[in-house]
Amino acid sequence: MSTVNALISRKAVLHNFNRINSLAPHSKIISVLKANAYGHGLLEMANILTDTDAIGVARLEEALALRAGGVVKPILLLEGFFQLSDIEILLTNNLQTVIHSLEQVEMLEQISLSGQLNVWLKVDTGMNRLGIHAREFEDIIRRLKNIDYIAQPFNYMTHFACADDLNNPFTQQQAEQFYQLVDGQVGELTLANSAAILAWPQTHADWIRPGLLLYGCSPMINRTGKQDGFEPAMTLTSSVIAIKSLQAGEKVGYGSSWSTTQDTTLAVVAIGYGDGYPRHAKTGTPVLINGQRFPIVGRVSMDMITVDIGLQHQVRCGDDVTLWGAELPVEEVAQYADTICYELILQLTSRVNIQFID
Image (cartoon, rainbow, N blue to C red; front, side):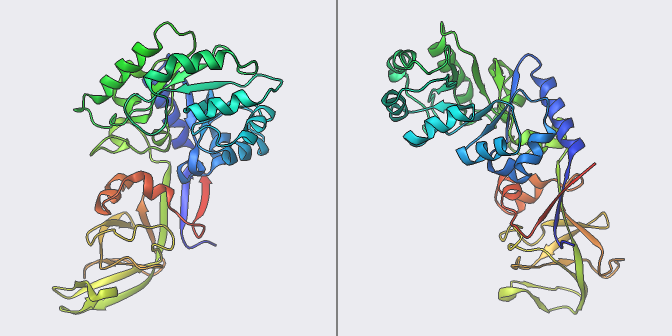
């Protein structure tokens, strides 16, 4: 029996997928399952999302793991391939790839292969991370069209830098630049990540690329997924392993960083940064014990946290503790830890048992 469990709700995942579909009913869906499906289990999530039109991952290893697990859906490598030897592997395993650099085009030109490789040409509209510049666009299109094993027509994509901020005009500027650049091209288009699916419907185009929304978390600033009709897929749980009675003026934890101002009771909970719980979670970060909110006090340790449950409590050793989930949004916990919810759901360690429910 595991001490710390991440309970993944299949019903919540399917609800979130259907909610996404309702927001962009005319777009096909690339479900983004990179980084072990944002910590939720790569193959398991792929098997839940049977209605998705395609799957997006970051790395070739992720795509091959899906194929080895029997997944036959179209799979797109969002970071593309990194070396010449990858190209034949893509073809052999019927994988699609993003093309984002001149170096990739040069590698494609170096070899001759049978079969057809589906590619997505990524345009950099201001993120300045991956993607070809507008000045390279016509030349690269011409070169890709001259490679026999590149499936025609190929598709086009870009990625937004600030779509989570409704007050930032840069998303609209990026979209306009992209639409202007690809005007007259035959291939299909994808612009919208999770934030754009929610906030920028003019970018939905032929395909959308939901990631975080599938898991019920919000990509928007100062919002939770629940506020937009999504359900958290993950509930992180542990249990109380000790109860400590303290007098006023006693210090708690490493560095003695917190002191009691009055007589109180602490519950020691079996979770810490060794499980992926954020070490920088501040005093006051909430947890739920038997459905009631209590604050963390003192520093997060490798294996434990301490929670101030006061004097009028009904907490006992063995009681269940929820660190985040449906009644305690992970977005809220992330704010207390000065981070983003992406990091929290992704950084759970191998000590945490992932269990699929309902």
